[in-house]
Image 1 (cartoon, one colour):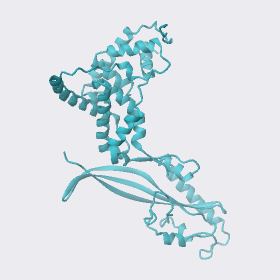
Image 2 (cartoon, rainbow over the protein chains, first blue to last red):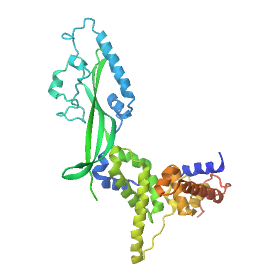
Image 3 (tube, helix red, strand yellow):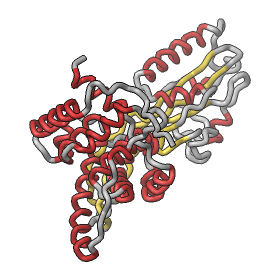
Image 4 (cartoon, one colour):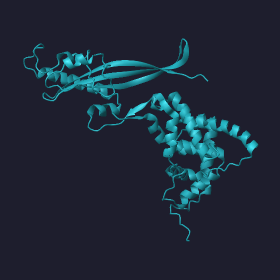
Length: 196
Length: 174
């Protein structure tokens, strides 16, 4: 290491003072609602689904899907005389991965707005012995800024498109199986611009 | 489910660096905080919803605001003949209990650098921007930025004696 590199290293070791808590409060007040537009989820220990979500690793989703498929095969094999109309302890409608059923108890999802378009009545009718309440979550895949759009009679707005994956997991601890369903969804958000 | 606004994590990472840069652009510590607040809020309102805001944008906004404010302050100053005291550069650093002669000498040497070299050094060393980002922030050419940085380091090397080792600063006896 030459003298200049050593000097750079020494300078980097000097740490600028952190902003005061009072200053951060001022910034928070000044940001107002715009400070709460983007949130991050804090890891919640012991909650497997929350942990998956907090990783935000999109490469993990295909792996989960494969795991779910494998579990599905194992589930079929675990029934020696499999007959759909008489299969015990299993929500048969839920096997169809294209038509998933979410649960309504997740705090982020309102009871009257199921993420997969299935009402709470339909969901409660599907409860079967041995199966726990399904766990639902939404995973942000990506988002894009589509630029400024005109709105008739209103100020222009910036349009953002968000792509989500609505995921529901059913678990049966007795047979050590689970079923996972993923449905893509997109939302567009318009944020009004203040002309100045 | 616990959530936290993303700006808090962003600000925890970049806040101290932004303030350090703003202190060089402003006339006093209070002005520096106002500059950071104004620049950060403006940029976050535009891009904050994405959760990914380039620090370069905020540094650039701080600099432009500082220029605008300096113009308006200059005209006010002429009227009020108010004297501003510059904030010592060393006071912007967390010196804690581990003060030593070499660190003190380094900070004093940085203080002596011409402002244009000091701001490049600050953006490169503490803001960790690339030369290209610094050039865009300061509206300078890449060559100018690189040479200012090189001159700054060269001066520091000459001014801070290599014989000064990392030994604690002795407090004067009372």
